[in-house]
Every structure is written in structure tokens, then in C-alpha cells.
Length: 123
Image 1: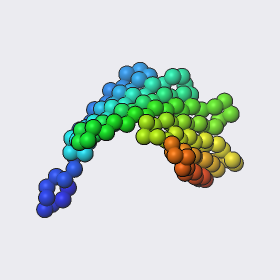
Image 2: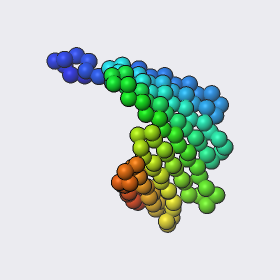
Image 3: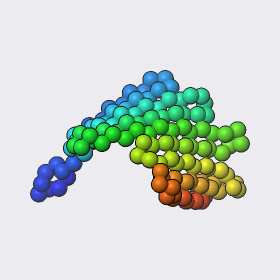
């Protein structure tokens, strides 16, 4: 909130959680963007999710879907595909007691990519 201009940004959101399914809806960007999402707990270790984002000004529509799971080895894997033209994934593993490593990669449709590594210590 800007005291001289009043409210400068606002959004409305709702969420419904029922058993293994969570649904969400958001109207953001001063009510010019509509977002809807769903997440489904497939089993005790796996979640699938999808999101739709629609911009009322210009009609831009983006879709995304992803899957996250914990492997028997204890590693966590995540993959996402987006209609904007990129895929991304990550792998999280424990490299030592109290030290986790997360590696991530994003590849765009024109084959440009980003990657990263993160070490996290638990104290």
C-alpha cells in the first residue's frame, strides 16, 4: 500500500483441499490475471500438479504440469513441463549427514539452459 496512492495492488484467492486433491483459484494483477491449479497426491511419495494462467489483457495462456516424487533411495526428483517452451527438473539428495545437495536444470525450447547447485546444511 502506498499512502499517497491508496491500494496499488490486490488479488483474490481461494483454495479447496479434499482428501488427496487440492484445487486453487487466484485472480491477480488487479484482477487481470486468472490462475487455476490442481495438485493430486498420487501415493505417499508422489504428487502430480497442473496450473493454468490466463492474462485477460492480451489473452496470453500458459499451461504447466509437473510431477514430484521421493525415491526409495531417499532422493527427491521433480520435473515440470510448461507451454511457454521450457522443461525443468531437480534432484535433491543427501551427500553427508546433515548436508543436502540440490541440482536443477531448465532447458528452453531454443536449447538455452540454466542450471544450478545448492548445498544446504542442517544444524
